[in-house]
Image 1: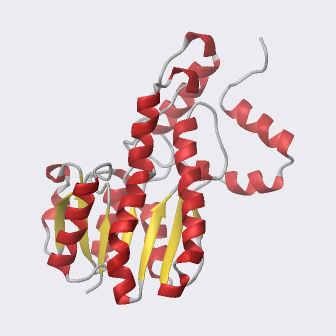
Image 2: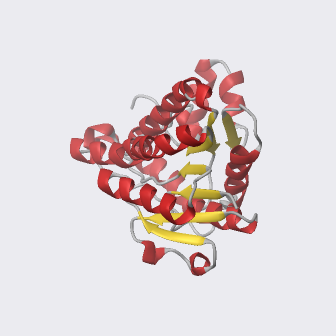
Length: 269
């Protein structure tokens, strides 16, 4: 039986991915900062529940070691854990920005560094990093989140070459808008109104109960494909509503104008 370890498995994309791998007959090491928040699905046989805070080095080391002890071997690691942080950069305290990177970027680095000795020894493994379409282009008022996802993109592309000699594949899954309970906490600054309010309304509407966005199931399917297709493909865009294609095809000025209009942002007042 093959084994996958998933970070941030208590909700959203992580939970959907854990359930999907289980349906496909995999042993799942489901990790979360608070394992008691894992759903009823996690009580099934062949699901290993583990506490893991990606922002804490000792927690990551313990979880990886315990997963290897209980499962014997890990075949795939999915770096999914993440938090949101939004608002005008001017209004975001530096300690909040640093904490954001501790989870969204350095958390993935800790997990990768911890699993690498095992993957090198077994001469194989797959690391799936959950990025975002906004890891390929920026959008207004989520600069910390975009910066973190851009970092994950660069990290993964570099590692792609670095890990080839060890038969270790690295993958980037890049979802567009997905209906989950993931939320961006908006810092406020009156100087950026009304643009800030217009942008915040766009995010709230897309994440609300009436949202028409697709469920995380499609992302889970893409993660499974990335983990199992046996190819050297690096990027797997998911449900981007054509945004990534338009970004590549439109002239830069038209693309910038399109994004500004989409978020209700006008020019100089």
